[in-house]
Image 1 (cartoon, protein in one colour):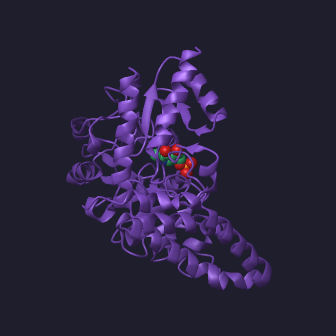
Image 2: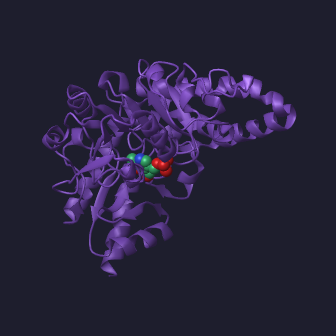
Length: 385
Ligand SMILES: Cc1ncc(COP(=O)(O)O)c(C=O)c1O
């Protein structure tokens, strides 16, 4: 694809007020707030204040519209997205639909996956669910062969973190989905570390369930996580975790549960409209900038980070091959945990994680000069011991 104009991307900097005060390298945890997100929150307040209960006439269709914007981002059909406060809740709802008495009992996951989700499986052990946790040989990646060996005829689902939060490694979601399907297992993909910075095409992957959220690369704030369910699976999955919004006729208040035929069967109760309004601006900006353009820029900036670290002999816990990298670079050295606090004090927003190091995430608005300056600060901090 044609080289993306850097100027076009950098012109967005003014839309993110925090960039005037900090070097913001923490989209893997919490994306920068766009200026116009405040306007959306104000609008939510005005609608609530002026319209009261009748604001739902606007809010109900808004949920669907916002879901379809997420669908457009991840290559999904309209009507396939449901929202919840966080991914952990969404996974527990998905698991309640997938895990059935007398059925398959094994989950295949890895020791690099985000642990919150793994806890969900472990807590079902008392009901007979087993978890095979693939051990990464290098703390960075999990080879495809390990997945292939582990997936068997008792495998209920494999859980793939598309981008690994500890290392920034990218996993081959399409290949792992194909391995799962070959043995009749489901594939649940977590795209929280990629949606908004790496192209995602859930339809091409054939993934069954995909979870992600608005808080990180989508610059949308907390509380607006989402789940895609493959359209042909929606009417076949019957979650045990439900609520009146999961009902085919919520306002009939019937005593018997009757699943909604749509993705709303995974919705449980009243959704968090404020969070969905807050998430609007960031998502629209990402869609306008375009994930392909973001990916090009991100690959250049993450390469620069790898080179800056290697030039100093620092340990890089992220793959060198561009196609194997998502959006963050993990860099470790003695004293990295203490350096985190000092870097934040100096206005560099990043974090430190055990078995990982300092995590740095440039987004489309980051400049090369900013990354050079971060390493000047790291040199200074290391020099002072
Ligand atoms: C890959 C991944 N999945 C899930 C989560 C957390 O999800 P939530 O807090 O929405 O449950 C994170 C948070 O950092 C993450 O990196």
